[in-house]
Length: 66
Image (cartoon, rainbow, N blue to C red; front, side, top):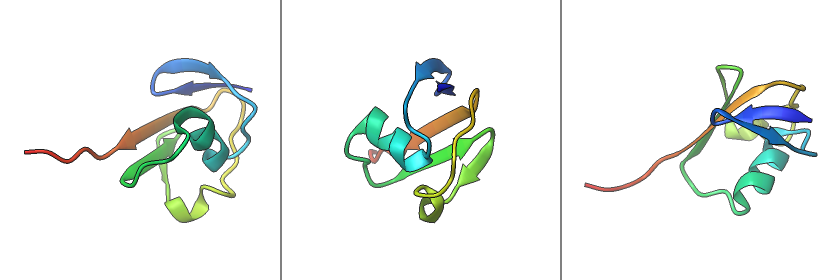
């Protein structure tokens, strides 16, 4: 399946947000947020939220610093 992840074209076998995160990030760091086609997907739905061909996925990770 072809997706756009953080503005880059990606081809993946993942069908859910969780699968994509594991494929792209490996271990998913705390503070990670995901939006699919502009809609935030709560972490509680990552296992079940499906991805469609051509979806735009934004993956954000909070960074601590000062």
